[in-house]
Amino acid sequence: MTAKFDCFVIFAEMRTGSNLLEATLAQVPGLFPHGEIFNPDHLGGPKVNDVFAMSMADRLARPMDLLERLRAADGLNGFRFFFDHEPRVLDAILADPRCAKIVLTRNPVDCYISLKIAYNTDRWQLTDVKDRIVWKPPFKPAEFEAFLEERQQFQIRLLNALQVSGQTAFYLDYEDSTQPDVINGLLQFLGLDHRIDRISDDLVRQNPEEMADKVRNFPEMEAALARIDWANLARTPNFEPRRGPGVPRAIAAAGAPLLYLPLLPFSDAHLRDWLARAGTGGTVENFTQKTLRAWKRKTPGHRSFTVLRHPLMRANDSFGALLTAPGLADIRATLRANYALPLPPEDEIAAMDAESYRAALLAFLGFVKLNLNGQTGLRQDALWGTQWALVSGLATFVAPDFLLREETLAEELEHIARCTGSNAAPLGLPGAGTGLHRIEAIYGRDLEDACRDTYRRDYMSFGFGALGRAGPG
Image (cartoon, helix red, strand yellow):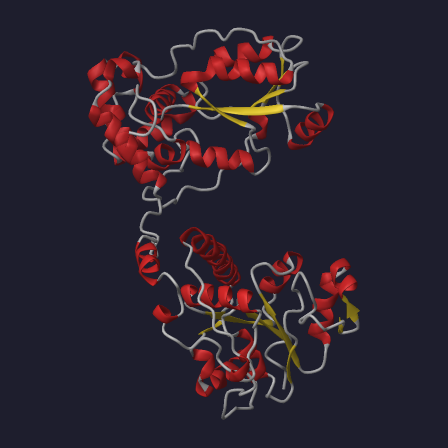
């Protein structure tokens, strides 16, 4: 009969009970756990010199070879893998449906306190209670939150990999690993006929006391834990698609180490003119990823930048561009017919008065909120996408050195020019933008509130306040 799996991995962390689980599984004939063979410091244990005829030096040089040898070995072989173990093999492990995934978890507070005790007593396993050392650690909120975030991110990565590959894992908690019935369920999951009647008694639980008796500052710990957003209620949902880096839009100054990464919509003629005067004259455009890499290699000391705009200013220009671009007539027709946007016929758009335009802009912001949340049938166009998503897209290829602000652009460009030895040419006045009416002429609190509701991530991420005020508001 064909085996269900070629190997297995126990995804766990320090102090989750993985030693006990492995000791219990080692009782099963034909099942061979090998410890933390991808630990950055050793091969499954401080005194282990080789695994499958590979030394530590061999594994560091050829980690995939060790994984292949484990897969090919007789019996069902496995290992434990923690968030900080050999990253070069993780994707191969996750993508392999013939590698059984076991996910062992534990209450993160218990895990954190147990780890602090182990570090300070140097007792990582206990086989006899007489060897136990009692020590009460202090709870440090910032340290715990960093500890928690690292492990949560790893668990999210595991879950996502299983989801996209259509695999399933056997999940069990610290307490579950002490129950023979649960372990027998795990053996069934692995496709093994053997069953156990007891958990390994080779190890003794080290710190069985209640938490209040294990921590020096339990009241402070309770208060700190009450402030942690366990359910991630403060998360800003994001249903916007990933944006590309937009390399063809990049503009370099000819003869100067300056690279401008524009964000749609383009209300930046004055900035492009400044860039053309910052070097020997003119700009270099129409990059591909290959030619941009070449430019960066040949231009030591280069600096790249993009410019953030107040979301309401940008929304006004995005709406103006939507109204006037010949290639977007089909979207305008759909907005009229299906989303109740008060847009006049095509031949009357240019003549919209301020009041009509303002009402349409307000309705457009309502549409964009629905659109970016994935609640419409229209594409989530980068023209009105969040600046946060556009900047994240840039970073997938060329992360900008500077995120400049439109309101302080002249001073910031002067600073960059000095840093790169470029011509510090004065920045000209900005153009009128693409909005049919200037935002100053139609501004109102209702527009600001609608824009904040639509572009909440931009306001939060980049610290925008109400238009005309600095800082968050």
